[in-house]
Length: 527
Image 1 (cartoon, rainbow, N blue to C red):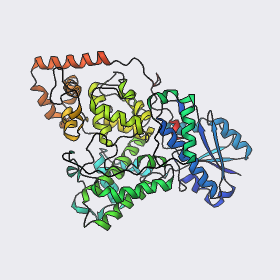
Image 2 (cartoon, rainbow, N blue to C red):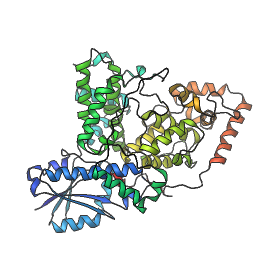
Image 3 (cartoon, helix red, strand yellow):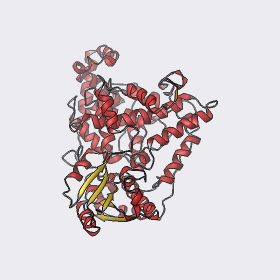
Image 4 (cartoon, helix red, strand yellow):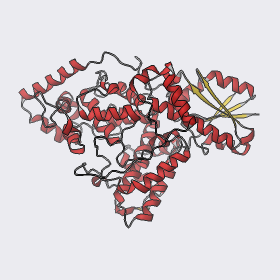
């Protein structure tokens, strides 16, 4: 019996379970990598994501070849044709694949009808296994992230002193919400120059007519992301040495022209498998204990909560909720996604700044995503499915498992509160407090009617009014609804008219996504 391994594009580390299952016979084990062109065209993916995934795949294939593995690397129109040719050439009787994280791709493999047995090895790319999360979830009446996070701290003994959390508290979030007031000295980011392999991918993506939609919306150069595990480890070390100690206080802040702030920039590498989340957590924890006389715990705890809390929780919820989750639309929002999400051409400066940044590097930090991009779509009544498809296409770290939960659940509250205790809806006041964007905007963040009224304001109050009956049962919305009730009826009519007029002016005429929503299909660039 000959066993072969198919390495998927988000499983790029030697410790992944399919490769490990054959490690003792690695010189006799054929391994295949496939770049599928047709799958890369299902959405107008960010050009830098195409480059990142394919360059990382090519680099990892070379690393395995140098270690003695028998590597086949191919570009093809689809996955099935090269797989069958390779299976027949090497007389493979069993194909090992580490279980894909994205549910649609798992189904795709099952439907390929390959001429050999397909064995899925358990995924080992998260801190919690799928079964561990299912067991935890099945024993609970509520699936709150804070409960899950605390259990994770205990279970994996991270920032714990015996049975108690370090510092005597589980959560220091209140200390991590400083607005960017005064002059801030911001750290530099660690970027890389493309090597020849990466440059070859860049040139091919730039010249290929297959990506004409993507070429219209996204920049491919300058491409500065790391593409190897060595570079990913350098980014991790750089973050710990230069950013982690001050990460906490300003992690929610937004500043014009500052793309990274104190953020780690590790999500693309974690989501490709170039880094394992547990090694990142251990490195941050160790650095804190080595420097705790100088470092504040709130920064380290805040960073650890993003990975052991939100990232692991988002994956667990994806596994737990099942196939129908991305179809939820609790508010019944149906407006099309505005064209400026693709072009960045809008007079709302906050959106213009964030969308221009995404256009350039395929990245925005969590508050830019949640409180600018998601928030506007929520209060404006945009279809959550169209928004999720855009997020999936636009971000360099986007995958089915993470975008469903982050957009459908957290950002749009389209699941009706399965994973969040309130909608993340806010007026311009939040953005004005947590950024400098409003200082350079044609709209007035303090006005909700009149010529200079900020759309975030009139849409916010229109959102509360539209969904008053649904929101009145959400305990954490009671203060906002009481404020809504204080607005005079005539002013409220003006607000509602402003919202209606805005939609009349901004109805999308060209929508570069498929007419059938992509959610629940396969993410080609990941594989």
